[in-house]
Image 1 (cartoon, rainbow, N blue to C red):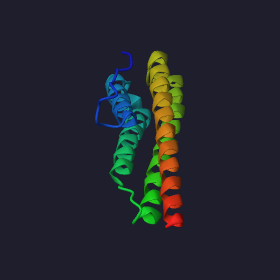
Image 2: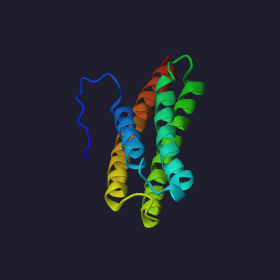
Image 3: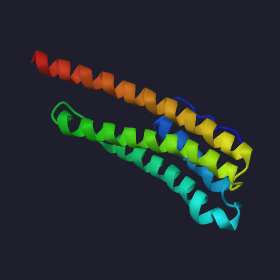
Length: 143
């Protein structure tokens, strides 16, 4: 199962789409995990991916304007950084799950590839937001 392709015309942010694909993949590959790991590794992997999608959606819903930038920019950045941390944790736990044979090596590799892809898009989003906030602050100072 490879990465799905998405087109630039999609209205949803790419990072959210890729995170959703990652969540779907994790849910699928953990369905047949050994029973003894279903409440440890499996639950952890599934919860991390769901948390990432939720945090990205929350960050995307924070509407930053010149009038509310002080409060909302900080909130949006916090959601983005929490998602970033959870993506890194997902990579770690997927490799640990493979060590205990809760998932197969090929699945752990794919989870990590998709996770890295999400991290890259998330970092681009954070960078884009940071530049936008600088412009807003500059415009506020020049007024």
